[in-house]
Image 1 (cartoon, one colour):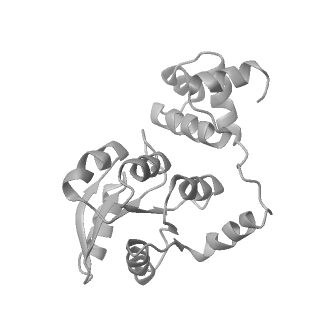
Image 2 (cartoon, rainbow, N blue to C red):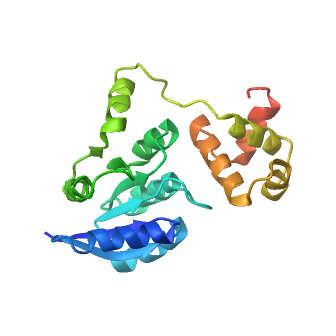
Image 3 (cartoon, helix red, strand yellow):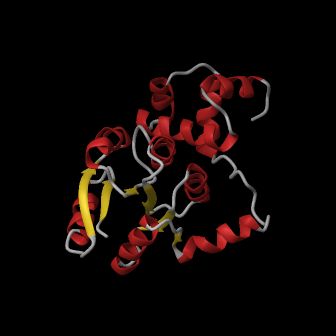
Length: 207
């Protein structure tokens, strides 16, 4: 069976490299490569991928949010996170969102190809570096929700003060896209629905 693969990464060099690496493999067809979550959602109905290789950290809509949307709207697609960020936030966030795999970008080409086929067949794939942490969590050795980073706390408190993304970006000397990523990450970690719930939590002194 030929596995139809969608590449989602905001770095064009990474997408180009992955395409060149995978399109020569028997049994794999690259049906599209895009640079953002919204673009991925837009092309899915036409390209009908079996597997989506998704970067974790992207401006606007991060990989976890994209996988959440894909799982809800296109459950037949097997999503695999392919990232340089070996962080619990992305690992457990991706698995909770419905990802079938989590690989680091230093994975060998052979491991990546095998992971694509395994995910397409309904299996789960984890890089060696993170598999132990997943087992530890299942045994109750790790907290289910990662703690907020110091930057996330800063952003959350500014949200609580009523600041817009633009105002927060100017205050902290970061981009608006980075602010959005921090807000999305904070909402996910705290199990909150939106900025209003976050602001209420701040107002109650819970952060």
